[in-house]
Image (cartoon, rainbow, N blue to C red; front, side):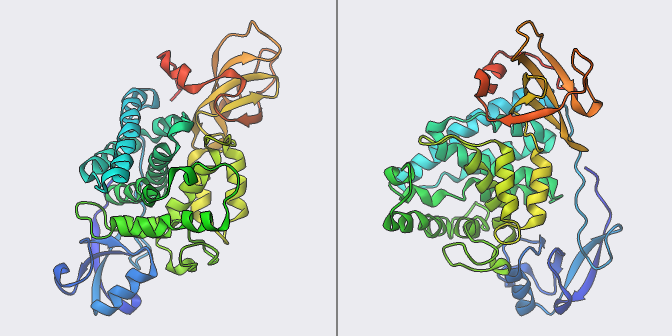
Length: 402
């Protein structure tokens, strides 16, 4: 990560635009409603609040900015290799899963929110994502359908953090959006378990009750100190859609907070690709089709495109069948060539004697008949009796080729 020398420009509030970074105000921060000293203007509510409460502000521009104070994206590079991050990410991911369950169960039983535990999960998760996001993304494919609610919350936090990194947000903002993702469904602790786990479609009454988790979430989080305050908005707004077809308020794009737009994509993607106690998930590729279909009406196009770029068309951890009948696990994506990941080939439909090997499609790897490998189709974890969890449990030190 490199740091630029920042310059601050004084500008009148009517010239402010979304995406500008406000470094200072014309009065002490304590005299305003703003919760943070220094923030990125991500929605119109913040813009209006600044215009109401200040006459001018100082925006920060880097040397490379367009001069209007649009903040430059942070350029991240993975600090360590995926294979080296995997073992620490693995223990962090497992303890985060059980900790998320403890938080939700505690909330359901006592109504108390374990803020220290929440902040610990977020810190560990974000640190791993900043070191090398490939490891956590790979682990997110291992799913336990009996623990859907807790694991889903954790994965939405993780995908939101990884998307924040891909979007070039600052580390503090990545922490904040991860907190929003982790807590987006906290209101579900107020919904009866039998409705949460109901297969098939809801009755009208059940659906109304289910939709209320957004309002419950807002009530549970509002005024909680020690936790990122924007999580309240996301719990409330993650089911709003750009065209006003969402709930609970059915507001349009300009009223939906930026972080809620990020979390909505992570939430939808994970819900579609996950196994539930009553249905199987679908592969990433299918989930992307659904997100794409609702670009501009439901989800912000730029965010969907960035999300797909981040996960890779063939997501790490998914099972792929090659056009020659060999089958393997996608280990990591090649950032420049999303259609050409690194794949660990494990078996073949036609040739039982095939040896396990790592192929890098971006290097135009060829099979035993000298044909260039191409992917025929992608499947969810567990297809063809291949389980990522078993594979990682063997502790094989695989060379990820990174």
